[in-house]
Length: 458
Ligand code: ADP
Ligand code: MG
Image (cartoon, rainbow, N blue to C red):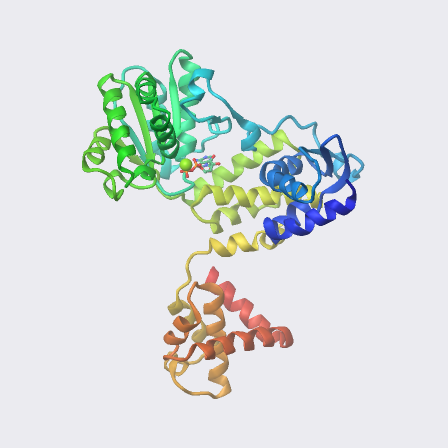
């Protein structure tokens, strides 16, 4: 294979993985060689290679395949001839704690047929405890101690990315290390259904039943998935009861409280509430900051020195949403950035490289706030903003407010028009264009837009 083929593959990757990903991860790769089915690329840090491999490896292979290139493996080697990195790079061990794919290990062989692999990074040690999750954490700890079953089931619930799966894996790891003889099985409700259907199809229901009834601890993640899937629910219910009867510990998670899961049979719903139901609350600032600090420490201990200006982590904790996964994503991008630029990450750099994430997780700005702030800023009356008046000193603020509404809210053109004194959507489109144009020509307008945007986002 030649650099040319890689060039072609890169072309397509731009669209398949998105421009942002492409620029951050694919562009910096240097093609080294392709021999014996192994395509080798130069990277600047092992982290970069691991990340590309984990997230885009399959896609890259697919592109090669499409181009008729017989590549079955990708190899990433750190190019040491980059002086600015050389001093900072520690010999990198496998980045187990960061990278899911390489971090996954399988359970004891006979459990693998039942359960899903556990993520090595998800332990109690790496779980940061704060007000929003302290109860869930304490309950998980209690269950992980083993011993007589005190609450059964333990039902953990909370929004996406708040740590449910992490806690479940942590329980499994802890139980396994304390009592290796225990049969601890973790799987998602989806996998449970899949196994169930497979057993039905292969006429192995007896095996299925006896296998699930012989475990000591059963953990089923994201149980809301089986809502509305009647025969799976039924089987789950029987498994559940059989295990509870035998005093075996069950741990369930869901994205909602049992009572709020639609399509769940009443008998299951009430069973799920028998034990202890605890929720993970949305993260708060302190917890987010704690998580960020911990991840930075981990990165430093595993990869390389990392210099981040004061205030950057605080800024992220302040601005990024509840979902810890999003927070981690932002941080990962900063790590990549740091390894590419090879110097301290400033607040400005962070803001720039995370612009899209920041925008997405911005707290919701309302139309009302936009109109009020714009009126204050230009010193015009709200009634004028909504009136048919078209004099420049009123029309311009109105256009600016429409522009801001388009930038900062999810509202459509017609919706925005409606709020501005029942104007047509074409008026809004025109206003947005006008401000975009003016911003490019007139520094005062650009400054106004920036000021207002900042005020609204603060
Ligand atoms: P859920 O299952 O609730 O959707 P996960 O358990 O998958 O969320 O967590 C999403 C990501 O955030 C994981 O990488 C997890 O390690 C991390 N995470 C969530 N909460 C914490 C926490 N309190 N401390 C450290 N990492 C956390
Ligand atoms: Mg989960």
